[in-house]
Structures are given as C-alpha cells and as structure tokens.
Length: 447
Ligand SMILES: Cc1ncc(COP(=O)(O)O)c(C=O)c1O
Image 1 (cartoon, rainbow, N blue to C red):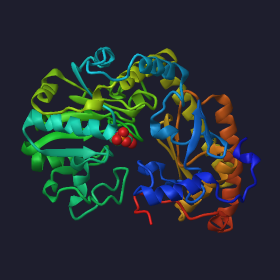
Image 2 (image 1 turned 180 degrees about the vertical axis):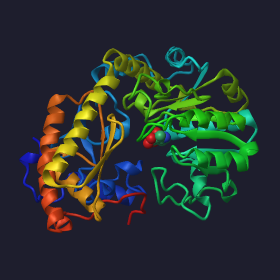
Image 3 (image 1 turned 90 degrees about the vertical axis):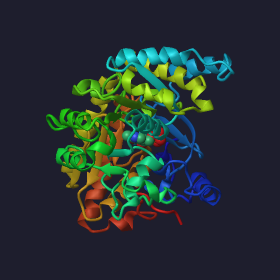
Image 4 (image 1 turned 120 degrees about the vertical axis):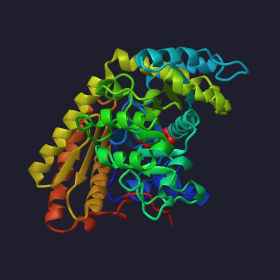
C-alpha cells in the first residue's frame, strides 16, 4: 500500500501520534535534529518506520514510501537492510559481538583504511561522527600542545565545536546549523574555535595571522556542496603547516560517496588526520580517525578510551560495506542517479515556472526554491510528494538501491508536484495548500 492508496486529507496517523507522545518523554522529540518531523512536514510527517528495505520505507500504518530524501542522513550509501552487510553482521552477532578480548576485524579494517589512504599509517575508532571529530581535535591539541581550532562547516554537537557560538555573534550560521545556542558549553572555551568559510582563503589567512602560534588544528570538510576553487585546499594545507597546526579533513559525509575512501583522494591534497563515520558502515554505528604516524602518536599520550568502541558489529559492517561499495562501483552509480535527479528537477521547474536553485554534487544534491516564502514552498513540496508515496525534501542523497524505476517514479511525482506549486506561487496560495505549519529551517526549541 503506498500513501497514494489513502485518502488525501486523512486524520493524523499513528506516527504523528507517537511523536506527540515522544515529545512528552524526550526533550527535543528525537535524538537527531534532522529527523524531527518539524524539520520536514510538521504534524504530518510519518515520523517512525516499521520496516526499511532497499530504497523503501514502511510507516507504522503500513504505508510504503520510496525514500528519495536524506537516505538516513547519508548513513546508508548502499540502501536499507542491505543483504550482504546484514548477513555479515548477523554472522558476527552469532559468533559474539562483544567479549573481554578484542575483535580481530578492527585490525583488518585498519589495514584496509591505510591501504586505501597511503598517506595514513594509524587508525583509531569510535562509533559516531561527532565523537570521532572530538577525538581528532583532542589528538591535534595533544600533538601540538595548543588549544585553538580554525574550522569550516558542520562537525557535530561537542563542546569544542559549539564553543564557536560563545561569542557575541552567531558564528555557526553559514556552517550548516544556524541558531544553536551554546547552552551548557563552558564559557571558558570562548575564542577557542574560529570559523572560516569554504573557498574563502583570506578568512583562514587572517586567522593564521592573528592566532597562528596558538593554532592546534584546521578542521574542514574537503568538499561539501561545491568543488574547491583551484588551489584552495593546497593553500589551506600550506597555511595550516606554516602555523604548525594539524590539518583535519572531516569526511563523515563526503567519504565513500564520491570515491572509495575519502574524497580528498580525488582532490590531490592529503590531510594529517581524516575522519570517517556514517558513510562507512551502511547504518551500523562505526567511525574511524586515520592519520599520519607522527600526529597519531599523540593518541598514545592522551586518554581516549571507551568500552563500546571495541564491539564487533561496527568493524564487520564497515568491512562488508567497503567491499560492496568497491564491487558495485557505487560512486559511479550515485553520480548517475544524482545527475538524473538534478536534471529532472530543472526540467520540471522550467516546465511549471517554479524558480529553483539546484546545487551540490550529484551524489549529495540540493534543491531550494527561489521565492520569498521558500520554506513554505519546500514544506508544500514535501506534503505533495508524501501524498504520492515519496519521502522528499530539499535534498537528494543517492543510494545504490535507487534504481531507474525509483528515479523515474520520483521525477514523475516531482513534475506533478511542481505543477501544483507553480500554480500556488502564481496565485499566492502556497500557505493555503498546507495542512499543517511551515517546517522549521534550523534549530528551534520545540514547544
Ligand atoms: C560533516 C559532518 N561532520 C560531523 C557530523 C556529525 O556526525 P554524527 O551525527 O554521527 O555525530 C556530520 C553529521 O551530519 C557531518 O555531516
């Protein structure tokens, strides 16, 4: 049963009901901001899944959707419940996923990671992206004996990062998450992290000039929504090393999607540390910090240790995922699917007079509406697509499980939705079409 089989103006289903209860039990409702229904379609987003398989997701009422949205926020590059990865994980569970001794797969995975990244000699593990980034920053600070960090982009929830907003201004706006109050972050961390913007080398140069001898690290994604300007990454590395700071590439989202391993392998600039997480293990928690022998040596001296970093499922899932990404040449497929989605968006927008901006590299595509009430239009897009059986928003993160029929069906539904949106914009009636409130655009406290 797809959402299409159900009447349009239906009463709130059990997913939205359960979410209302969740908000009374869990501050913020969900454990990840991007999975809050308020970020997508307030009061009507299905919120919970009962089953996910390939590119499809079933909600609590048995409605089937094709997920052409964030693909678990980029955690499932292959597709949901991938049989090869799940098979390897189930076998590992049956052999014991935890013991007093260590699992040998963590050594095997380290060998794979340093073979794929010849500049790196050592590896440490964690299970989530944010904690792996905190480890990388700890290692950089330990290796240099300094505290300050220059950064660009989003790197998780930890104190070292949110300290950017301890100043008078909203330093994190423009780095993926605006509006984050640094509540609970020690005021003493103020001025320890200094933001710069991607492709704005002068901003980093100014930081190095002012704080070079206190700088422990330069932290950034090597690539996110656009390619680096010629010479940008080379100059970032030169400036970092001139200051004797550690260059950290956050490959939590960019890794494994554009190439097998970090996207930096294709950009010609090697960092001192690189961090991988959700793209690496197809939905099973796993994260890795890889680095040069010299910098990683500092991890010996700092206490970096956690019981669950030793469990077996993460490394087993990563090994199986990496093998399948390689076998199936997944990055080529993701580019192919993303190219089709981007040109389909443009075609439908032109046909129905909807002003859009299409951005991002194909595997991580972004769509925004170039109108005054853009967030209302984006909310309406999600509502119209949900009615047609698709989880959709202003982003398309490609998965190997997205086959031609998914892309074709999605683009046919986009075309129908853009027709409605084009008319709604022309008649100034976007908000009238919405069955609930407009979606949140950034971090907001839930009421
Ligand atoms: C570039 C980047 N860094 C860090 C993180 C944080 O990872 P996690 O959500 O696993 O803590 C994310 C997650 O979206 C990310 O995209």
